[in-house]
Length: 292
Length: 341
Image 1 (tube, rainbow over the protein chains, first blue to last red):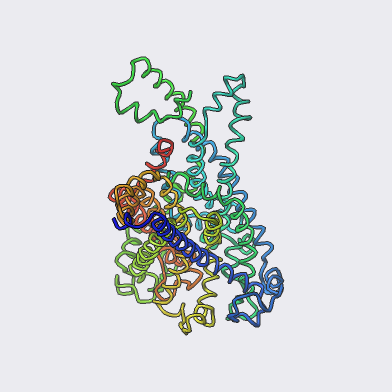
Image 2: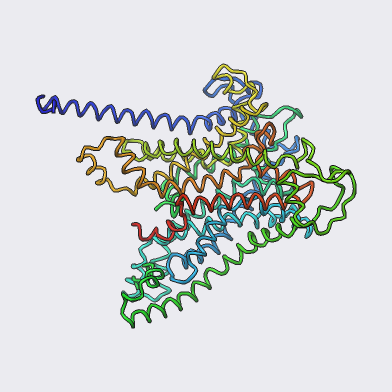
């Protein structure tokens, strides 16, 4: 009521001040989130470019900058084969993603577009599969792959990876497909396209971003996998995550921190670039289905 | 044709009296032909999942009923293998081992004596990380839902911890928490972070919260964005305070999304392996169930298979409780996502 007694311009300035205060609070909170999320990552970069002798130097900006750590990462003199590990990760993640997409696209199309019994059950199974604990399949697969001589092969890593990447793919694609304007397909048919043409000219271009986003998510998932790779890979098929976890330094009981941070940087930078470029799509993919 | 996009099944089944007779028949036929197409499209994926998940799970159950061949680590006598009944399960759950004098409690330090402590550690880490991630994630989501300049930069930045492989995250925080590391330097402490139970667990919790809160925040944010703005406007007009708007509008409306996010994170945390395995190798009270299984694999497959089956059951029961009693229905929200728009 006291507002009514004030003259209008004063009331407006109170409101404006309150607004400004609330917006500056938003900015402060946003800054805190930004720092919390990026600071550890920044620290990894600083350490990766820092001379080994200054590993624990707390200077917060880039000092004693050197490329040496990256040379160490790729050098094989300490028994590391980082280039090979990168290649292994690339092979395993790409093949996993490709296989998951190949199967997932069809299943997702059916789940999103067609009506059939047991749909609920299939979705439940797919969702349950994506939440499945990796250890539950690692034990029998460890024995199986040992028996049939698959230890240290790529398929020994790709097959278990599919167990969590395929459900993720089906689930994400289903939610994407459901939101697509399928009426356009019908419209194209009415305008004289054949079913095949309608699919190729209308549906494919619309579905491509969804498939692409799902591919990114699947690839990141497979690339980041550690448990399966740590158990079922050999020296020859070791992936980068395992390599980084057990990176050998020059001193037996001394953790080669700067080199490990450099290795981490090599592995992470492509992902971070991917994420920053496709931020909007990735967020849509991550939250698709789960919350809509 | 556009009718097809509507979910017909359940509606068609639940109130058969509403539709016209011939329309019903048409729908039925449509469902039948679509059913065949759907089967053709879905079965390949189901076969693949059958091979990579169902088969290993069944195999694990079969294995878990067999004795491990080889020297018994406790008695030193040779075990020939063969059917074990539920011995492997009893071994873990009652922490009983074979000794020269018969069944007795597993000696301290052996894996057999660690089942309940590992279960406890797993649940402790799960409850604390998920609680922290929910609260912080909610706060982050609210900030990200506001309109301000640089909002998209913020949304991109929160994806950075999510994108970094957990193995790298573990190494990064291991370095931050090193004795001479930046954490001790910044806070003028000299804590051996990975050297004793409390700090080791704290380090793992902090690393986990850093890595996965963004995921939680984005899921909650998606839920927040579903709430129409006019609901808030109406509440404001009616004189609701900010706190009332939060508890009366935001919380109830975001609850389905929130429950699904919590369910996902809980199941994920229950299988936690990477962070403790790399940061502490399970030392000092950080052995989770997954770590215990992995440690057992090279000692005896069959016993490890029993433990992994138990782990799977525990996770399954928790998921069941979530869906059944707490109303987190991820399948429902997936099936309805077309309608909810």
